[in-house]
Every structure is written in structure tokens, then in C-alpha cells.
Amino acid sequence: MKHLTGLYGLPASTLLDILNLASSYREGLKAENPSFDPVLVNRRVALVFFENSTRTRFSFEIAARHLGAGTLSFSASASSVTKGETLSDTIRNLEAMKVDAFILRHPSSCSAEFVASITDRPVINAGDGTHEHPTQALLDILTLREYFGRIEGVKIMILGDILHSRVARSNIFGLRTLGAEIAVCAPATLLPCRIDHLGVKVFTGIDEALAWADAAIVLRLQLERATGGYIPSLEEYSASYGLTDEKLDRLKRLLPVLHPGPINREIEISNLVADRIQPPGYSSSMLMEQVTNGVAVRMAVLHRLLSKHS
Ligand code: CP
Image (cartoon, rainbow, N blue to C red):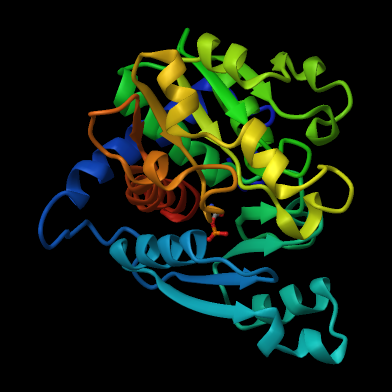
């Protein structure tokens, strides 16, 4: 594996190799002052972000530093992109400064594959348009594997704005490769055409979807994109598709709940469901576990792509 631009087409053996290495890093992160073998010493990783980020950017930065790598941060808004510089010129200039790898977030789908085609340095997709967000899916899969002890045969329901979600696509590809059953649940306007061709069940009613699921991944309603005619109103969306205690009470069994963040509180997920780590109640929030697992997964990906000894 030279780049990580998506989970589509990656074999189970590659996914398991990353997940197993991430699990061992996750153990190390439980220490009060985690310390790791600096396998990436003298390596320089460029975080090239054309979109805002909190979790992905920070966790890549922490992951790189845990492994001894230096990080360089690039924000489009504070760069020469504002003067008209192109993506390819930006990458070529950073490459000329001897950057060892690119971690790219960009609003255009398939931009990571484009960058991979113009550089010989490893490229990691940190979210490109509505295409893929592979490390988010890997951390979701690691969180689910820790909870269930396996992925094969587990029924995962992805709820919400599937149409605009790179997280949904990466999860569908990765989880299916590892043998999970996947369903999506959303209003028809927020489902891509022929989503069933990706091998997923489709629900438009949340009660049915919850009854089917062993776990739910709730997606952010992408307010910047999904309000323009896709839904009648936020109130109606929230009443029909927001994950609340009332809906989980009807289920009457414990459901682990994941969300990639950032969350729109009281729109796609209620405060109670987002914040409840322990019962009483019928949900268990995995949100902070996901964030910590994000560091471990990104350490594993950086190790595999950049270490001379991987
Ligand atoms: N989940 C995720 O990608 O969050 P950020 O946009 O904060 O990185």
C-alpha cells in the first residue's frame, strides 16, 4: 500500500493489518504518559487542509508526533491558494521542500487520487468531498470491533445524510469487506441513487432500521448542503430521523451509537444519546472512544505508509 486514498477495493488482509496495529497502539495510549517507538523519526508529514477540521487534523498531528515525525500544517485560507495557486502547484512546492507525505483534506471528490497521481510521496486522504474518509471509517471499525469482539456478521445501520457522506461510503466499503451487514436509513432525498448496488439494505423508517441493527452510526446532517430543499425543515427531520431516547425506548435493548462528529445537537442526535456512556437507558455513546481510536488508527496508517521497517 503506497497511498491511502480510500477503502474501496482494499483487501481484508490490509484492513486487518492496520486494525491490529491500531489495537496495539490503542493499548499504549491508555498509559498516563504514552510513549512509543519513534519509527518515523526525521520524517516530515504535511497536513494539507483545504477544509476545516478538528478531530482529523489534531489526531493526525498527535499520531505523527507519537511516532517521532515532524508535522507541517497548511491551511488554504492562510496560504497562496488565496492568490490563485493551484492544488498541483501547492503540492509540487511542498514536495520540493522535502516533505515525506501528504495528508489531504479537500472539498473535491477524488482530489486525494489526483494528488497521488502527481507525487511519489505517500498520500493519505483525510476526507475528499463526498467521496471517502478512510481513516474515519477505520476508527469506526476499530471501535465496533472493540465493542463486539468481531465485525463479521454484525449489523451496522448508518443513519442520516447518506447522500453527502464520505464517511458512509468508506464505512460501507470497509465494513462489507470485513463481513458486516450494512443498512442505511434516511429520507429518500438524502439517499444516493441506487445505493442498494453497494450491497446495503435500505430503510426509510427509523423504527424498522433500529429493530434490525446491532449498532448505529449517526451522520451529521450537512447543514451547508442538505437544507436546500432536501428536507422540509430541521424540525421535521429531527422528529423523523433524529436519534432520541424516545425512539430507543421503543426498541428496549441496548444499542451502541457512533457519530463521526462534529455533531448537530438536538438535530440528528439528542444530547442524552450523544453523551450517555453507561446505562441506564437504551444507548451507549461511543463518540469519545471513536476520537481516541482515531489517534491509534492514524498512528497505524502513518507507520505502515512511512516507516522503512513496516
Ligand atoms: N470526523 C471528522 O472528520 O471530523 P473533523 O471534520 O473535525 O476532522
